[in-house]
Image (cartoon, rainbow, N blue to C red; front, side):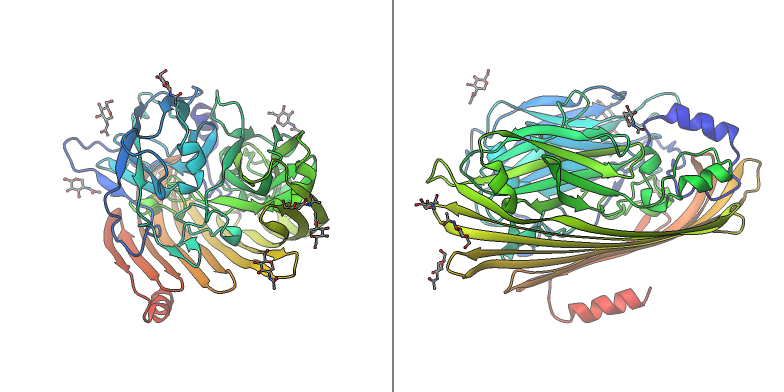
Length: 597
Ligand SMILES: *[C@@H]1O[C@H](CO)[C@@H](O)[C@H](O)[C@H]1NC(C)=O
Ligand SMILES: *[C@@H]1O[C@H](CO)[C@@H](O)[C@H](O)[C@H]1NC(C)=O
Ligand SMILES: *[C@@H]1O[C@H](CO)[C@@H](O)[C@H](O)[C@H]1NC(C)=O
Ligand SMILES: *[C@@H]1O[C@H](CO)[C@@H](O)[C@H](O)[C@H]1NC(C)=O
Ligand SMILES: *[C@@H]1O[C@H](CO)[C@@H](O)[C@H](O)[C@H]1NC(C)=O
Ligand SMILES: *[C@@H]1O[C@H](CO)[C@@H](O)[C@H](O)[C@H]1NC(C)=O
Ligand SMILES: *[C@@H]1O[C@H](CO)[C@@H](O)[C@H](O)[C@H]1NC(C)=O
């Protein structure tokens, strides 16, 4: 995503891109000249908020939160208004849904944005690049898990969306936010969880142990002070986002929810070659450092969480024509990641402040990270006693194999990390021991051929998390397992275009999010697969012309409800978008769809 156009453009002018090295990168779609035409809706395929009630019934009440035109907002503080819950329908509510609607016309890059309530991030999102006739879009997110913050009065509601306006980039992002409050339980839960909303994301990243079945009593932000957004901007591995936090003495459960996005030289971190390749070939780029990144969470210097994030591709990424009008998985509602930290309560319940730290291993500029600490308290006691038992330092293994000769070569990285933590919490409900095990496997290969004109990236990330809670008498209170996989394949080839300084690029992208989870009784599966092929004529960062085909299938299967949505877009037109709410033969259909690709 572009924060430094002027700088980047300077580089483009003095470098003629004859190799694919700089690809994939982000581009600007052809400018829209249209006046008085119909703008097009840009869409992300997400699971519906309720499969039982499609579409959602009208809410009990709707609260308009803010409306703003994000014009020249570069390096300005977030747009902030005062928030109070609706007077006409006071809490409690069964559900709260944040609704964003946006519109844009003209010429503009995609932008990253964040929404915070009293410093607690409730949405990380990015924008479409305007299509020919202008674009509009909607994002809906179940934010019930932030209820304890939503119930507060006179707190700040902020949205940050840095944009640049000049003669060339004319697009102003007009955004409005509303909150929909529901009093009935219209949002169906599957297996004790909201289908596909485990961590509040349409991606379907399910949370460990159904952690948000009941919203936390307290949500504490782990972020910065807010003048440049409440996120930490991480420029490199040695830079950390730090916040001192004291946990209430009667906390009985803690979950840290991490928000993350990557930009600048790390926007496509999963396709970065090692720095040696760039230096040996005298390439004018700083997008190196290899292709492995890991976001980590530390408490008092001890590693308590790690995550290789799902690769979200923004709408200017790789080939912007691929994301018109169907955007990449997660682009409008970036996933957040949950870490069950209850086993660590033993070292947190001392009434003192503890250092919470976020960082990104191997990172280069820049990453935007922050987190929310969801805390559940024991209302019947002033002090809860807890003890951390096992807290094994995580085991990490890595192998790298780098081979290259001039511009051709292959770079392979494999990594694996395992951790285990366990601890008991003695509260008024009983004495419970929580055990969390987590294993991450990572494989990445970046290959250059044809004197650097062809690039292929293949990545696989697998994460398995198990959480069990056992009562003192040995009864297993809950046992949940979640297995996720994020396979990604990209290829780009570049040939010189018909005019000087132009290139023809052909791109193929295949990205997928898969999850299987079980809470002992109910199994839930989610599969979100997207494939795109395209070609484009580019000059610098600008796409002069091109075409693309994008197909996507999103399906989920729970105990009593299933959902499937299939869409196809060709050259900027949505040709197909069908949803089915039915379990019968879903898997068969799903296989058929996938194998027909
Ligand atoms: C733009 O609008 C014109 C006129 O309404 C229409 O013919 C054309 O198909 C639109 N283009 C796109 C990409 O939707
Ligand atoms: C955005 O809002 C401004 C007024 O603030 C309006 O002039 C402009 O037409 C709007 N843009 C779009 C694309 O609707
Ligand atoms: C919020 O602020 C307004 C205006 O200052 C005030 O009238 C109101 O009492 C405040 N509400 C709460 C709950 O503090
Ligand atoms: C990391 O980034 C910070 C902030 O830009 C900078 O002050 C520091 O020197 C950098 N450290 C390294 C090792 O590059
Ligand atoms: C454990 O919790 C129970 C219920 O709150 C309490 O009665 C008991 O004293 C606690 N035990 C210790 C050692 O704190
Ligand atoms: C809670 O349970 C654990 C494991 O059974 C035990 O070791 C610990 O002493 C218990 N704590 C209290 C306060 O009873
Ligand atoms: C064991 O403890 C749990 C939680 O305190 C309780 O619900 C369950 O009935 C107990 N089981 C037995 C066999 O005592």
